[in-house]
Length: 128
Image 1 (cartoon, rainbow, N blue to C red):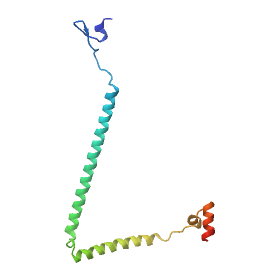
Image 2 (image 1 turned 90 degrees about the vertical axis):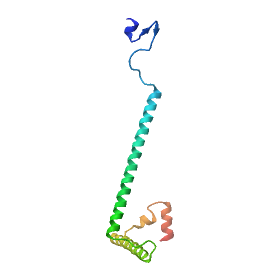
Image 3 (image 1 turned 120 degrees about the horizontal axis):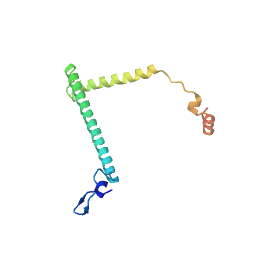
Image 4 (image 1 turned 180 degrees about the vertical axis):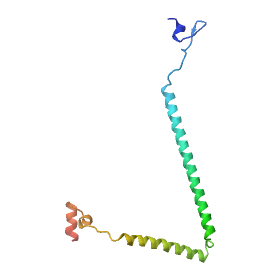
């Protein structure tokens, strides 16, 4: 088989590289992986930024709509302080109501004092 038939070309007696694709080197593969990872990270960051901007715009729109429906008093005024106090009281009442509806929690002595064990038996002797 002649040299030119094996994939090598002769040019004035010099041997050139074989024709065809070569396998990528380890460094090239590593660079490709790093580039792909960077692109994925960049795409993810862009998606997060877009989602943040969307949430921010939605929050702003909701705030504007609420302001149109029920305008707030001027910041720092006595009326605004009263509104804030009312809002805080409502939130506290809702929390207290939810806690009251949940009822009392029954705990066994073994849960409070501990089950079988050295330290728990000392605690039972000491506290009851």
